Length: 330
Image 1 (cartoon, rainbow, N blue to C red):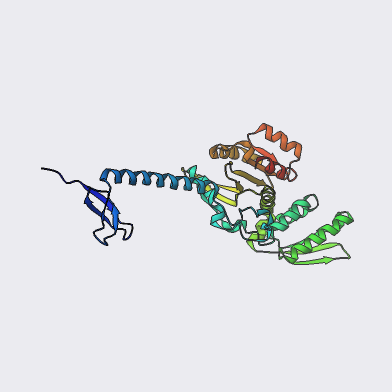
Image 2: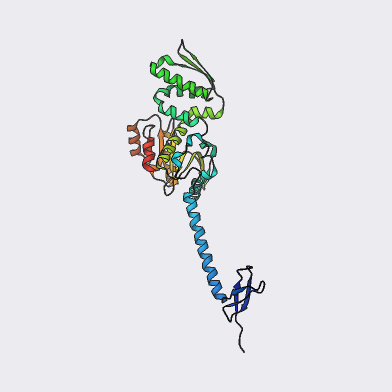
C-alpha cells in the first residue's frame, strides 16, 4: 500500500493557504484556481523560521538604534541654522527620549518637565546677559535674592556706587529686564542716580533671580557647543530621577549625545561644600566619570576650581571655564 504525501502551498493571487498532493511542483489553488507551487511541510517550516528569526533580529537592531540615537526635530544636518534660543523645539517628549532611554537602562526612573527647556521666552537671553556682566551685576543679584527671601517687593539700586560706565550698563540692563516683564515696575531717578524696582511676584521670575538664571546660562552654553559641533543630542533642565530604592534626586542640566556618557551639570549660586559627599555618591550611582559630573560654582575662581577638581572625583568649573569643558567632553 502506497502512502500519499501532502505538501503546502500559498496562493499569490488570493493569499490562501492550502494542501495538495506532493507529486509535482505545481497545482491549482483550491479557491481561485491559480497555479501555485507546492512545498514539502518541513521546507515551509524551515523557510518561515528563517524569516521569523531575521525579522526579530532586524527589530532588535532598530530598537537599539532608536534607544541610542533617536532623532528630534532639531537633530538634523541643518541644526546650526536653527535659532534654538527663540523656539520651543526642545520642549517635547521626543527631544527627551534618548535621555529617558538611558536612565531606564540604568533602572532609574526619570521625570522631566518639558517646558523647562522652552527657549521661546526671555529667560535664556536674560541669563546670558547676567552671566556676561556678572562681575557688575553680582551685588544687585544679591539684593534681589534678599528681597525675595524677605518678601520685600520694592528695591532701590544706588548706581552712585558704580563707575559711570557701569552705571550706564546696569541702567540699560534693568530697563531691558523691565521691558520683558522681569520687573513689575521700573523708574530711574536721574538726579539721585537710583533705580527703583518693583519686583514680580510670579514664581518663575522669583526662581529665576534666586538662582534659576544660572541653569539657563548653563543650558545656553550647552546648546552653543552642540550647535557648533552639529551633533545629535538630548537636553533637559530640572530633571528628577528616582532610584530603585526610592531615593529621589534633582539634576540641574543634562546633556546626552549618542555613543557618549550623559553630562550632568549642577549649578551652585551659594554654599556647595556641604553637598560634596552627596554629589560624589550620586556620580558613583550614575556610574559616570568625574569629567561628566560638573559643579558650576559662582564664588570660586579658576585656580580654586582646578584645585577642587584635583581633590574630589568631580569636575569644578567657573562661568569662564564652563563652555571650554563642555567642548572637551562632548
